[in-house]
Length: 262
Image (cartoon, rainbow, N blue to C red):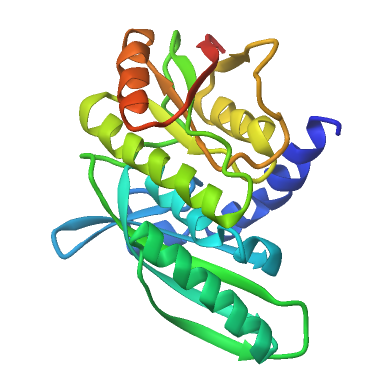
């Protein structure tokens, strides 16, 4: 696949949405909103800082494996612990029952309860959208635009591939390690590697930071496939500590590059 195609499809093709909705920030005054165009939205509510993300619609194939986990990484990567999720289902009653049973297994395993949503029965391709809300654990959301010159680029967690049980096991290890890491190490920037893979993720972080991300010649993982793990920019001095925390939590890390000047 041409590496420019994922960028065009998953990044550049929707930039008009940002311009269309930009005025909404002046109404809600979020901590992180349309202007930031990040993975999630950050708002202050009831003395708490909440991170909220909506994702999908997911095809039934992904719903039956890890859609709730996939939706939750947008919240987790910003430094928040997921509190609950809402689902929106469409399809036949039979398909909806299968999807909700799978989502329930994911919710119980990941301790992210599904507290409501909407279901529409129709003889069409079954799909599901998910909204996840979480409470920020760090003082500020970890943005995708704040990498620093000289940072190391690390991937936290294995690609969330395989059958449902395998994906859940990998995700639980990644989440445990990540929450331990952010309580002990300063993360300069972070983004989950989803639509368009590393190519699109790196492109967005580069553009927003005004810096150049140089990936290793052999990054070990696919450049265009969704990995569902976390790309972070950190001080080189913190790499060893991050890797130790990850190892303690039975989580893989990959050093994939560095940040240079723009």
